[in-house]
Amino acid sequence: MEDASPALWLVITTAAASGLLASLVGHALLGLPLVKVKVRHDARVDRAGNASVLSYVAVTNVRGRPVLIDAVFILKRRPKGGPGLSRPGGWEFPVSLSEGEAVKCTFEREDYPSAVAVAIDSVGRIWPRRRWLRVKRRALWAGGLVGWPWQRNGPTDEQIERLLQRTRELADRRPPSTPPG
Image 1 (spheres, rainbow, N blue to C red):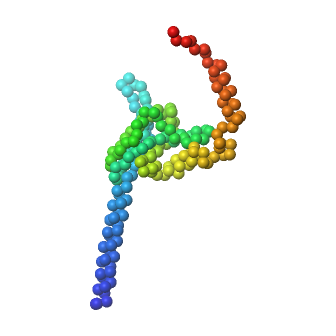
Image 2: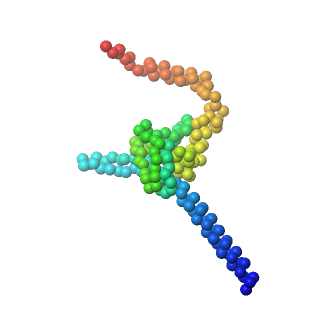
Image 3: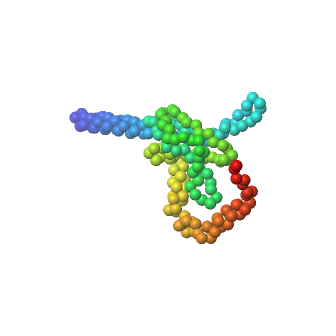
Protein backbone atom coordinates (compact mmCIF):
# COMPACT_ATOMS: atom_id res chain seq x y z
CA MET A 1 0.00 0.00 0.00
CA GLU A 2 2.83 2.39 0.76
CA ASP A 3 4.29 1.84 -2.73
CA ALA A 4 1.10 3.17 -4.34
CA SER A 5 1.10 6.50 -2.43
CA PRO A 6 3.98 8.23 -4.24
CA ALA A 7 2.57 7.25 -7.63
CA LEU A 8 -0.84 8.70 -6.66
CA TRP A 9 0.71 12.04 -5.63
CA LEU A 10 2.77 12.04 -8.78
CA VAL A 11 -0.36 11.54 -10.88
CA ILE A 12 -2.24 14.30 -9.05
CA THR A 13 0.67 16.73 -9.32
CA THR A 14 1.16 15.95 -13.02
CA ALA A 15 -2.55 16.39 -13.73
CA ALA A 16 -2.63 19.72 -11.90
CA ALA A 17 0.46 20.97 -13.74
CA SER A 18 -0.86 19.90 -17.14
CA GLY A 19 -4.26 21.47 -16.41
CA LEU A 20 -2.60 24.74 -15.42
CA LEU A 21 -0.42 24.67 -18.54
CA ALA A 22 -3.42 23.94 -20.76
CA SER A 23 -5.40 26.82 -19.27
CA LEU A 24 -2.47 29.22 -19.78
CA VAL A 25 -1.98 28.13 -23.39
CA GLY A 26 -5.74 28.33 -24.04
CA HIS A 27 -5.89 31.81 -22.56
CA ALA A 28 -2.97 32.96 -24.70
CA LEU A 29 -4.40 31.46 -27.89
CA LEU A 30 -7.91 32.75 -27.32
CA GLY A 31 -6.52 36.17 -26.51
CA LEU A 32 -4.99 36.49 -29.99
CA PRO A 33 -7.22 38.28 -32.45
CA LEU A 34 -8.87 36.44 -35.31
CA VAL A 35 -9.66 38.80 -38.18
CA LYS A 36 -11.93 37.77 -41.05
CA VAL A 37 -11.68 39.58 -44.38
CA LYS A 38 -14.51 38.98 -46.85
CA VAL A 39 -15.42 40.52 -50.20
CA ARG A 40 -19.17 40.82 -50.79
CA HIS A 41 -21.24 41.89 -53.78
CA ASP A 42 -24.81 42.65 -52.67
CA ALA A 43 -27.38 43.02 -55.44
CA ARG A 44 -29.96 45.75 -54.76
CA VAL A 45 -33.07 46.99 -56.55
CA ASP A 46 -34.38 50.49 -55.88
CA ARG A 47 -38.03 51.59 -56.00
CA ALA A 48 -37.76 52.58 -59.65
CA GLY A 49 -36.74 49.03 -60.55
CA ASN A 50 -33.08 49.77 -61.28
CA ALA A 51 -30.66 47.07 -60.23
CA SER A 52 -27.28 47.89 -58.75
CA VAL A 53 -24.50 46.02 -57.03
CA LEU A 54 -22.93 47.26 -53.79
CA SER A 55 -19.43 45.81 -53.53
CA TYR A 56 -17.55 46.04 -50.26
CA VAL A 57 -14.79 44.51 -48.19
CA ALA A 58 -15.87 43.54 -44.67
CA VAL A 59 -13.11 43.32 -42.04
CA THR A 60 -14.28 41.78 -38.74
CA ASN A 61 -12.44 41.07 -35.50
CA VAL A 62 -14.14 37.78 -34.65
CA ARG A 63 -12.41 37.10 -31.34
CA GLY A 64 -9.58 38.21 -29.14
CA ARG A 65 -8.18 41.49 -27.99
CA PRO A 66 -8.67 44.71 -29.97
CA VAL A 67 -6.67 45.00 -33.17
CA LEU A 68 -5.58 48.10 -35.09
CA ILE A 69 -6.01 47.65 -38.85
CA ASP A 70 -3.40 49.78 -40.63
CA ALA A 71 -4.49 49.12 -44.21
CA VAL A 72 -6.83 47.11 -46.39
CA PHE A 73 -5.78 46.36 -49.95
CA ILE A 74 -7.28 44.59 -52.92
CA LEU A 75 -4.91 42.30 -54.77
CA LYS A 76 -4.99 43.10 -58.46
CA ARG A 77 -3.17 41.37 -61.28
CA ARG A 78 -0.86 43.61 -63.25
CA PRO A 79 0.28 42.44 -66.68
CA LYS A 80 3.71 44.09 -66.37
CA GLY A 81 4.35 43.01 -62.78
CA GLY A 82 4.47 45.30 -59.79
CA PRO A 83 2.99 44.98 -56.35
CA GLY A 84 -0.63 44.58 -57.40
CA LEU A 85 -1.86 46.04 -54.11
CA SER A 86 -4.31 48.88 -54.55
CA ARG A 87 -7.37 50.41 -52.96
CA PRO A 88 -9.87 53.17 -53.67
CA GLY A 89 -8.91 56.63 -52.49
CA GLY A 90 -11.78 57.08 -50.04
CA TRP A 91 -10.76 54.37 -47.61
CA GLU A 92 -9.57 55.82 -44.28
CA PHE A 93 -7.19 53.89 -42.04
CA PRO A 94 -6.01 53.04 -39.35
CA VAL A 95 -9.18 51.66 -37.73
CA SER A 96 -9.33 50.02 -34.30
CA LEU A 97 -11.62 46.98 -34.04
CA SER A 98 -12.65 45.49 -30.72
CA GLU A 99 -14.04 41.96 -30.46
CA GLY A 100 -17.09 41.49 -32.69
CA GLU A 101 -16.68 44.85 -34.40
CA ALA A 102 -16.57 45.19 -38.21
CA VAL A 103 -15.80 47.85 -40.80
CA LYS A 104 -17.05 47.96 -44.40
CA CYS A 105 -15.09 49.52 -47.25
CA THR A 106 -17.01 49.98 -50.49
CA PHE A 107 -15.49 49.90 -53.97
CA GLU A 108 -16.57 49.91 -57.61
CA ARG A 109 -16.97 46.43 -59.01
CA GLU A 110 -15.81 47.56 -62.46
CA ASP A 111 -12.46 48.73 -61.05
CA TYR A 112 -11.82 45.45 -59.21
CA PRO A 113 -13.66 42.69 -61.13
CA SER A 114 -12.28 39.69 -59.24
CA ALA A 115 -11.45 41.30 -55.91
CA VAL A 116 -9.30 39.47 -53.37
CA ALA A 117 -8.84 41.55 -50.22
CA VAL A 118 -6.17 41.53 -47.51
CA ALA A 119 -5.89 43.49 -44.27
CA ILE A 120 -2.63 44.42 -42.54
CA ASP A 121 -2.70 45.15 -38.81
CA SER A 122 -0.36 47.30 -36.73
CA VAL A 123 1.84 44.31 -35.85
CA GLY A 124 2.41 43.51 -39.51
CA ARG A 125 0.20 40.42 -39.68
CA ILE A 126 -1.60 39.90 -42.96
CA TRP A 127 -5.20 38.70 -42.79
CA PRO A 128 -6.39 36.21 -43.95
CA ARG A 129 -3.25 34.41 -42.91
CA ARG A 130 -3.31 32.09 -45.95
CA ARG A 131 -2.50 35.07 -48.21
CA TRP A 132 0.65 36.28 -46.44
CA LEU A 133 2.96 34.48 -48.91
CA ARG A 134 1.22 36.08 -51.91
CA VAL A 135 1.49 39.56 -50.38
CA LYS A 136 5.14 39.12 -49.38
CA ARG A 137 6.02 37.83 -52.85
CA ARG A 138 4.39 40.86 -54.48
CA ALA A 139 6.19 43.22 -52.10
CA LEU A 140 9.56 41.63 -52.93
CA TRP A 141 8.78 41.78 -56.65
CA ALA A 142 7.86 45.47 -56.44
CA GLY A 143 10.90 46.37 -54.35
CA GLY A 144 13.33 45.40 -57.10
CA LEU A 145 14.93 42.69 -54.99
CA VAL A 146 13.44 39.95 -57.13
CA GLY A 147 13.05 40.28 -60.86
CA TRP A 148 14.36 39.46 -64.25
CA PRO A 149 17.68 41.01 -65.32
CA TRP A 150 15.96 43.39 -67.76
CA GLN A 151 13.75 44.76 -64.93
CA ARG A 152 16.59 45.78 -62.64
CA ASN A 153 18.27 49.20 -62.49
CA GLY A 154 15.34 51.08 -63.98
CA PRO A 155 14.28 51.50 -67.59
CA THR A 156 16.71 50.99 -70.44
CA ASP A 157 17.54 53.67 -73.01
CA GLU A 158 15.20 52.03 -75.53
CA GLN A 159 12.33 52.10 -73.03
CA ILE A 160 12.92 55.79 -72.31
CA GLU A 161 12.97 56.52 -76.04
CA ARG A 162 9.67 54.66 -76.54
CA LEU A 163 8.15 56.63 -73.65
CA LEU A 164 9.21 59.93 -75.21
CA GLN A 165 7.85 58.84 -78.58
CA ARG A 166 4.47 57.89 -77.07
CA THR A 167 4.15 61.18 -75.20
CA ARG A 168 4.97 63.10 -78.42
CA GLU A 169 2.30 61.14 -80.28
CA LEU A 170 -0.24 61.88 -77.55
CA ALA A 171 0.64 65.58 -77.61
CA ASP A 172 0.20 65.67 -81.40
CA ARG A 173 -3.26 64.05 -81.17
CA ARG A 174 -4.62 66.47 -78.56
CA PRO A 175 -6.58 69.45 -79.82
CA PRO A 176 -4.94 72.78 -79.09
CA SER A 177 -6.27 74.36 -75.94
CA THR A 178 -7.55 77.92 -76.00
CA PRO A 179 -5.98 80.28 -73.46
CA PRO A 180 -8.39 81.62 -70.81
CA GLY A 181 -9.43 85.18 -71.15
